[in-house]
Amino acid sequence: MRFDPIVTNPGRLTILTALLDDARQDFVTLRRQTRMTDGNLTTHARKLATAGLVRIDKATRDGRPVTYITLTEEGRHAFTRHVSDLTQRVHQAMTAPTMIAPVMARASTEDVWID
Image: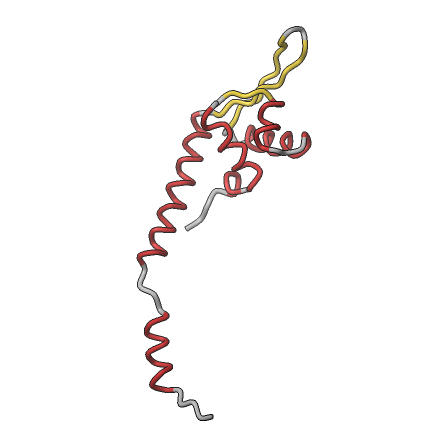
């Protein structure tokens, strides 16, 4: 199973997660919520925008420039796919027969410990 490297990066996953509840946030609010530096947030947001997972818009508010980052439908689907794939993989791992019991049974009959 392969995971999307754009989504799985911790910084980008943090941004996508933060945008789930409020799909459009200004840069300062998103920076505060993700606890990222300006440079990290900018770099990761640009990667997400290049992949079409977020949109970056510039506007003015009260005469001051503001950058907004918005989760796109494609971004929401990519995040949902990632969570679904990860959940499926965890479920597979939890329900797969474990190899520890056969190895331990074989070890107890084959190994003879002498003190």
